Length: 185
Image 1: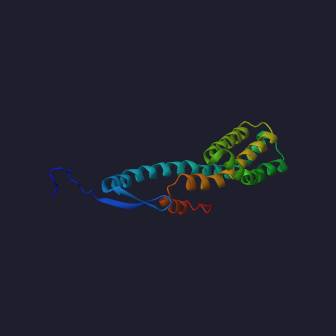
Image 2: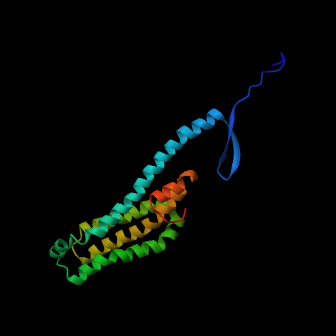
Image 3: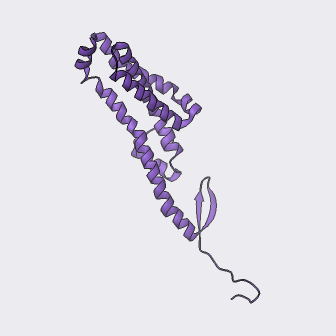
């Protein structure tokens, strides 16, 4: 019961939640409910969309790996390549992927995960353009090498940037396992 000289005190239901770093915060029940209901669904949408964009690099990788076999006769006939020249074209992708994987950590440290994803897309685009418009074995091999470097970068940056940096802590493990990614979280 309130006294005439004092304002009435209201009891607000609260909920305790552990947010970041294990600290306990007390939120009004309504505020905590709205945070959980609206915030997490929009976060999940952004994470899923960015994951789909990042994982689309795997499509590029599959395309470039599967491209060389069915296109062999057309490329050899159009450019007049020898078996040795075409064999180099087929295998240089792996060399580029090794180079990209070796330098991926340094590039991510220097320009960040988001910048690295942009950089690898530029490498892949330039590589595909070099392959598409090549008039000789040199440009063909350079394009394949660039796409390989992009794929080597992709193998590292998807797990570190997309999953570890932008996914909320409560979603990381499930997203990591659903993608089959074994990189660090």
